[in-house]
Amino acid sequence: MTLWFVFALMTAAAIFAVLWPLSRGGRPQSEGSEAAVYRDQLAEIDRDVAAGLIGSSEAEAARVEISRRLLAAADGRRNPPIASNTGLRRSAAIMALVGLPVVAVALYLPLGSPRLRDFPLAERTRAPDATQPLDNLVAQVEAHLEKNPTDGRGWNVLAPVLARLGRYDEAVRAYRNSIAYNGESSERRANLGEALAAAAGGVVTSEAKAEFERALAMNADEVKASYFLGLAAEQDGRGNEATSIWRGMLAKAPPDAPWRPLVQAALARVGGVSAPALPDDAVAAAKDMNEADRGAMIRGMVERLAVRLKQNGDDVEGWLRLVRAYMVMGDRDKAKGALTEARQAVANDAERLRQLNEGLKNLGLDG
Image (cartoon, rainbow, N blue to C red; front, top):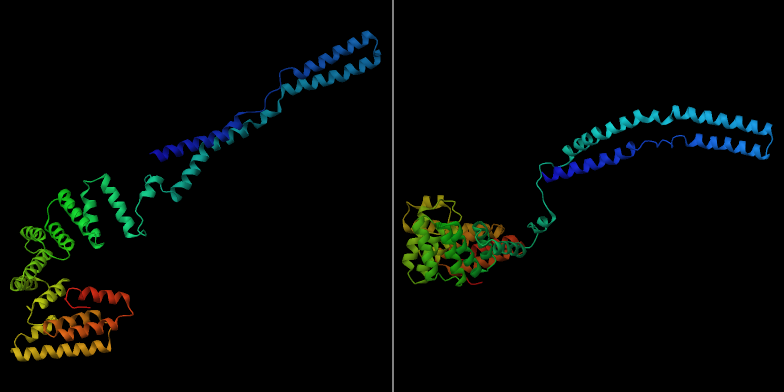
């Protein structure tokens, strides 16, 4: 609304600028000014004749010339020449009153943005810029939350970013505020427990365990809480309990669950898996075999996988399967050898190397 009011004032100012000169027509001369001059000249001739300064014949000739000019001036006042411009001024005034607004609107509607809300310069300087470094964006969100500490959505956005940056103590505070202002949920409780464990250097403390138990009480299928409760059991020396928790997770998980490799690696770490993380169709084909035949089939598949990877080392997922298979089979030396070969194979590709290290970081292998 303010924008349209400004446009109206600008249009009115433009019209006034055009009409002002048109309204000032030619000024009429002072009535009778020219005739008065000629009358004064006639009177002066009479005075010169009386004083003997000029002769009668010269005086008469001068009177005739001055009288002619006097009559011409009188005719000019009766037929003023500026009257012919009145119609032109009227047309220009109509064009200014009607034409200027019409032309302005006709240009603005296709070229302008009449529905765009106001965006003052001060707000533009505060708007987040996606090209800024992550730390700068986090600082902006933190500044916003200092002024609006009850903004639950802001805490919900900030908490995982702080955790990703390794600022775990601050992430714990952010998750607590997210729960306080957004309400309870199993996901938020599990995220808080994960941040507490990360802040303790990866140890699932009693405080973190309590958060995971609360999450499971709200949602028995909360994956993160189940995994960390298994990790807590492993750290407490209760390997059988950890194995039971993680096996239960795999039994209920869909085949394409993204966290399957993590849980399988955890089971391999505590020695609780009877078969490596090979494709599901291969496991199904082996279920009716005896133990010796099943073991031979699995070893053959692992060896074929190792040969294929030596020929084509770009398959990061294949390397991860191979290392996990060796871990499950209890051959830790081969797992370390495969890890070394994998890193050498993708050493020139930073992204593949990062993916490989991410997949291997929970296997418990040195280097």
